[in-house]
Amino acid sequence: MSDQPPHPARRAVGVLVKLALSVGLMAFVLRDTSLAALWQTLRRVQPIWVVAALAAHAVMMAVSVWRWDLLLRAQHIVVPARTLSESFWVASFFNNFLPSNIGGDVVRIADTSKSAGSKTLATTVVLVDRLLGLFALLTVGALGAMAARKWGVDVPGVWWLQVAAVAAAAVAVPVFVAPRLLGPLLKPLRALGHPWILDRATMLQDALGRFRARPSSVLGALAGALVVQVVIVLFYALAARSLAVPLPLFLAGVLVPVAMAVQMAPVSINGFGVREAVFSFFFVRFGLGVEAAVAVSLLGTGLVMLFSMGGGALFLLRRH
Image 1 (cartoon, rainbow, N blue to C red):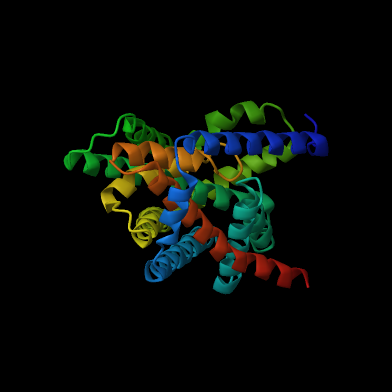
Image 2 (image 1 turned 120 degrees about the vertical axis):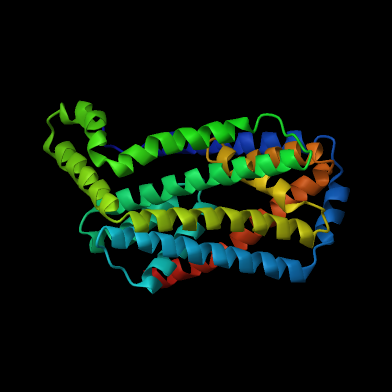
C-alpha cells in the first residue's frame, strides 16, 4: 500500500464533486422556495436569542474540552487546560473552513502527541472521544424520537437511530470492559508481522486497558458527550427562536442529531446542502415551512462559523 498523499488533481476533483453535490442539494431544497421569503425570515433575527445561542455553543465547547482532558488523564497524559482549549478552538476553525471533517482531529492529535509521547496514543484518545460523541448523538436522537412519538409526532425512518445506538453499545462496551477481546479483531493485522503494525496494535490494547482501569473517566466523558449533544440541540432551538420559528425542543432533539449524523458522510462541503435537506424534510413533517428550515440551518451554521473564527485568529498567532 502506498504512503504517498493523494495527487493534488485527485483532491481537487474530490472537492469539486462535493461542491457540486452541495450546490445541487441546496438547489433541490430551494426549488419551490421564494428567496425573498427566505431573506425575510432571516431578517427577523432577534439579537438577544442569537447571543443566547452563542453562549450555548461556548458551553458546548467547554464541556468538549473537559471530556477530552478526562480521557487524556485516564492515559496519564497531562496537558494544560488552556492548551487544550486553544487546540479545540483551532480544530473547530479547521473543521468549519476546510472541505473535510478530519482537519480538526489532525490539529488535536498534533497538539497532544508530544505530551502523550506517541501520535498513536494521542490518536487513540481522539478516536475514543469521537466514538463516545457518536454514541451520544445517536442516543439523544433516539430519545428525541421517543419523545416526539409520545407527543403524537411520528417521524418515519428514525428507528434506525435506536438500532444504531444499541449496536454501537453492543460493540463498544465489551471492548472497554475486556480489552483482550480486541485481540482476535487485530489478529489479521498481527499476522502481517510488520514491527510498526505490531507496535501500534500493542499500544492500542494497552490504551484500552488503561481506560478499563479508569471507568469513571470513560463514564464521565460519555456523560459529557451526552451533555454536548443536548446543548447542540438547544443551540439550534435558540437559533430557531431568534427567527421566531416555533420549533419545540423535543422536535429539535430529533432533527438535529439526524442532520449531524447524516452530514458526517464525506459527500458534501462541510454538510452544506445535506444539512438543509434534512432540516427541510423534518420541518415539512412538523408543519413548518421550507424557508424556516433553511433559515434555521443557515443561521445556526453561520453562528458556528463565526464563533470558530476565533480559532483562526489563534492559529495565526501560533504561526507568528
